[in-house]
View 1 (cartoon, rainbow, N blue to C red):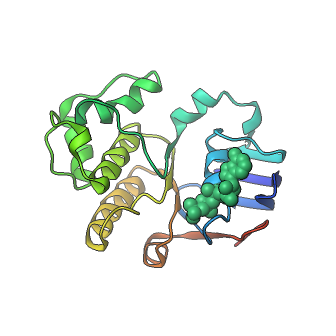
View 2 (cartoon, rainbow, N blue to C red):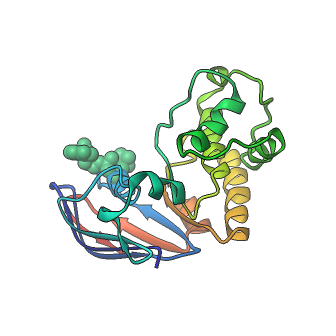
Length: 210
Ligand SMILES: Nc1ncnc2c1ncn2[C@@H]1O[C@H](COP(=O)(O)OP(=O)(O)OP(=O)(O)O)[C@@H](O)[C@H]1O
């Protein structure tokens, strides 16, 4: 297992007796708005801690792990990713910089842009991109960090169906090739049916079920 959760409570939002998230699989988290999907994802990245209970990452208790080190291995793409002033190049490299890693050269950055189907120059100002283009830029930023696990919060919410399909297909093929794991929140039944190998449904006012 990549993550194991036991007896987790968080305010009146999450109550999860037990939950397993497998390694090398695509896990989709589904459930109505407000059910706590983003809250759960943030806990897997130590952005939030439960009031009670334990979360284990590869058998280690997350509450005892260094969040900075953990976030090199487990990278989160938030629902509304931040775009920084400056070029596309800077915006892809900035995740590596924040993690204290070396930046990548242009050929690697261009590979990442290609993977997310963003046909733009690295010198272009990121601020001028559309909402869906910014979302793909942030996905490229997560990808280039080469983590063990991707936590993706509605990564294709700003994309049309056709682009969503292209981006997810190449992204997921790549992470399969690299033996990586993904946990992905989605409202798209189509996406969950096509790519989900494991589905977790969260219900409002409490628990998770499988
Ligand atoms: N740190 C927090 N403290 C208190 N309440 C919070 C906190 N974070 C989120 N909430 C509340 O918890 C509930 C679940 O929020 P969350 O964003 O996890 O839902 P979600 O399932 O991801 O929803 P959506 O599908 O709309 O994105 C919401 O009612 C939200 O207001």
